[in-house]
Image (cartoon, rainbow, N blue to C red; front, side, top):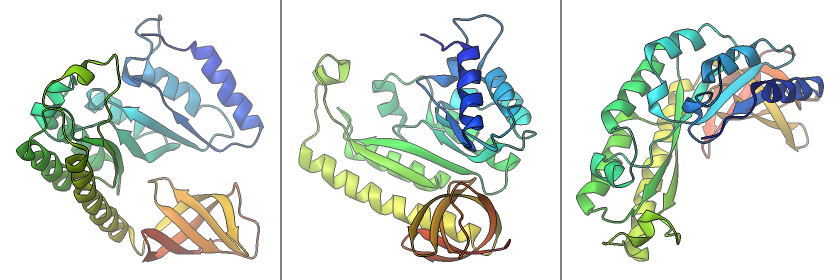
Length: 265
């Protein structure tokens, strides 16, 4: 385990803020363990310090494991107005038997508890995740358990990957490797669920107002950006919108992208 020097993090964020960046993502491997090899700091402390930096208006977390999402953590972040209503919460499989073979330190109960804790504290909170299909030993029953769990908790977006064996890893030597054909079939089934879940989440947000950080100009007068709960939005404007945060009304879903009208001119 190795944690980056906290002052280096703060100085980088300050540099980004001076250069007009408005949103940052705190990311890493096992970020919940940040600071355990240092003294007098942890992940929540870094969040608080970043939150105090002028110019930064949005903070996201990426690849967080469910163990960090407890009542104390949520009570702290829900009082920070720069925290986005979105988290990329590690899952990998919605089946406890597969998680055990993956040597993950959590189970589906832990994950579900974390998701509902966030949702009861934030309105229309988005939870995205990664899923691996075809991990060695994954039976049809295991796969269906994973699929059904993800549907049950209504994730807002799933990134799906077929298991890829890599030399030198424990999984490379595991028995009961899954065929490429089966992995691709399972990926296709999960992809259909993902599209359905994305549509359900977008529908929940229809006809609501949200702030969008516009990131690029797609075409003449057409701009694209994300809400704080990670909905991809497009809107038309005669004014330049890139790197500006504007309030919009979300009014139409097209190809899993939300079309919106500007509320501010």
